[in-house]
Image (cartoon, rainbow, N blue to C red):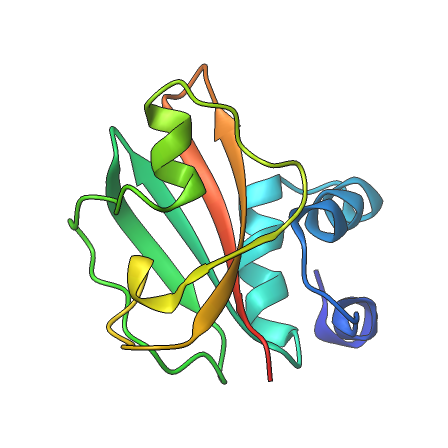
Length: 131
């Protein structure tokens, strides 16, 4: 995903996993690799998080996403990723959740867009701090 070709496609009004999926198809790459590259080049403050068994395994923050996301932390019950692990339906569009659900940031909100990979028992979440 060369930067000169990929970066202009990251300039979107609202970062979503739908955008990431479309880019993954266009560039013939995996959704996870595309999400990582997306947060690296998106002008918005984004992060991508991989969780397994209800625990945050890793997170990649974009250059403007300043809150810390703790690896090994149990997902908070008010994240949509936690809902996926508990067999609850997750929204198909990004939703606002308290920023503290994912980060060390007290106060404020964050957008969460999560996809459940049932065959892997994992979630991929795109987080976005609106400006």
